[in-house]
Image (tube, rainbow, N blue to C red; front, side):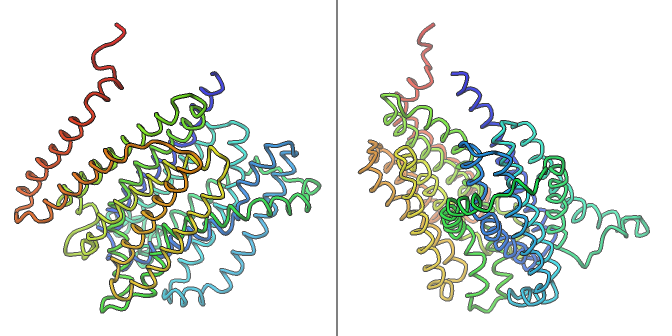
Length: 498
């Protein structure tokens, strides 16, 4: 029991900084969208999508390999040194190539004259890669407090620098042009200050790790490295497949768009609209953060499958509440991503598809317990690859005809197919009696209420939101009516046991 309590406590400390950090970073969106035109936000989104892929490539599964070999009988210091030397060599080589071909790369991705953006983010990726193993070492050594502090420093510094350079510096110079800020700020850099903020925060984080980087030449083991690379390459494949599902749209859209608008402008307002769907992503992350440890500690209990089925039902209910909450109050929430005249609101049509796609992806993650509990994680890789193929295929086929909406359709379709496929296969290896009838009823009612608000001929946004509030209450009442007896038993409303 004490071991489980320790695990739960450390899980909280490890997970909270990531969830809170992503939530806080979400609030940089209005800073960017109210400061910069959609074209510049499109540049930021496009380059960050490339960064996400290179972060997976440059770590090539080494973090997971470190856990595997350092935690199972190998000399931890030898594994640490071997990992760091390998990542150090590839990271330095990556930066050298990037700097040497920065002009060509910036031209290839249509950012002529902005090779500094490419260099800054390339160095940031390398720095983050070098921090991956030290962070993993903290987890292996059960040092969650230092882990959480350093993650928090990285996130906080990034946000502070963004606000300083993008918001405070222009305000100070506007009122006092001769201020010392003139030496710290160049308005020509623009959205580039977002990249600089990430670079500085990553560099500072690595500096904190320098005392722990005790690397001895004799600890490097070539044979061990071969074993680690062999073990880690499937992790690289899974990571790339997952990243394709989440980020490839922001790379393919400007490449394949064939309309009359500037492709980067289109990417800018599409990417801004995707930020509204992140509310569902944050919910899923928070849920997984508590659900996965629970699954592995509870699966030996006799009633485990029944509990998993109940959890799935309430996960769907909460997900649908978030979906309706966002869609019913879009008249207010849309101002989170800029003013209407800025063009950012052109992409709002993707929000319901992305929200629902994220909900199905959350269902997929929730039912993925079956292949984790049965030690058949290769199915997870297969499902991820299927999703990646669908995502790429539909984006390539549809973007030239449907523009940015194709990205949303592709993500939704991939998430749905992965979920259905996982359910069908999972029922063969680890059957769980999910209450599909009731879950289906909740989906039907939620979609019916959403359809009503779409067809509602009310022009005034406040009247529309008032009516939507009534629809929202109807869904709550329907849920309460269906779940009343279960909820009373679950929360012991009647005071049983007093």
